[in-house]
Image (cartoon, rainbow, N blue to C red; front, side, top):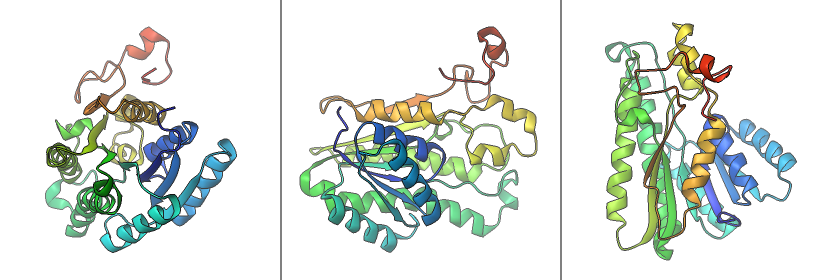
Length: 268
């Protein structure tokens, strides 16, 4: 297996997409450094991984990705514990304030989202590059962005979050160029509608909209494994993974379930 024995630092690991990616990586034999703000959730995740994949070498590191000193301290600990960091997956994210429109958001909500979704990606990446990848001249950075990085959907209360996703996409592309003449890959994985707490929050004012969302954590995790498992001479630079019924950000095939005998809008 291409990922067997690779050291992977995964942020936002304790729930949703991050938890699914952690499980998929454990199945592949990767050595996991799992980062999240919640020590309790991380410990629960660690117990599940140990139960399901007893041979997996996994450790947890509680930190707020928006705090550079805390991030850098944890990166140093990971390297001390595991020797290096081969793969960084930036997945931690935060959405606040929906369905309030931008003028109605508190400045605190705006700065908190920016700090997690923008500074967090940059802080973790900066530390991992300088502490591990640049000296070896190799590694993989996988940024979990969103299809909304390219086109914002018509739901109110998402201006800051989707602006953050667009910035993550720009950061990914610019960083890939700057790391020219190294063997460090920089990739973007863009999930479509996935039933995260973000989506639940956004559609709380209209539950009928939630019918278009799906429990797609496993599908996103499979896509991440696919991107990370490519040979050194090939990069899947960016990949959109969406349910077939999601024709575009604004258009859902509401009859897809009926035609295909599915109870949910699924990708498989």
